[in-house]
Image (cartoon, rainbow, N blue to C red; front, side, top):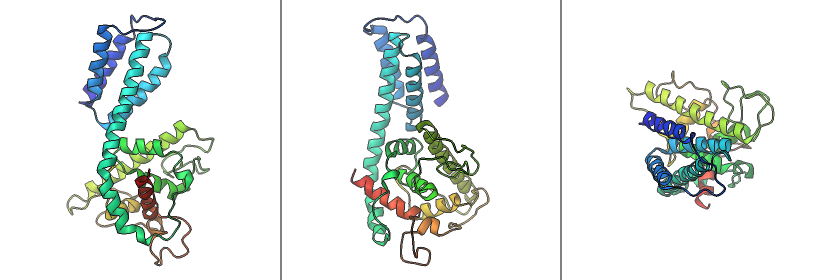
Length: 283
């Protein structure tokens, strides 16, 4: 289905690139209106992941060809706006569906938070981008932010070790100045990396019935522990059975007054996950 959709778009824009008229004030004719309606119908029936990809591609193409053909400008502008609108509508619906889960998780676990209950301001400055990418990849936004915070205290930086804001050791981003485009790519790389680890773990544990099940609308306590264990050094292809983080503070710091959180100075995955859920509930 995706190949057909991509082919449809490539074919459509190839046709649009020829024979367009540049007009001072463009008024769409019947053929253009019908073509736009047809393209919107196609966009209305694709996944959130594809909607996000098409929105980015359409936006880039719109910028690249702006001013050369008013008809093409009109189509690209409308399709770009429509794809983002569809994506946002789907995301808003998912947020509504996730509210009961989030409130239940907060109720069950918030009483044992030790550190300041507020999410650091720098972790929220790119919330909309993180939320869009997390939704497009069906991953909990709160977990994306929690990992970012644990790895680089939500640093909008390229650390000197070259591993990026999410400290993916297999990547080399360099240590020069970061940009929004580079940051967005590091977030996407994290989401791809996370899904890859989860898939390998789930495949390795099919026989014993264990799996990590994360989605944009929620995650269980056990899922968060298993994911933290995989992200905190363990290889998803070689791990069988229940797993816990090699460094327990990675998951538990700032939560409960036990041996792993004494003198806690930085939230673990669980604490920050909870705090972001609480913040989302009021915004």
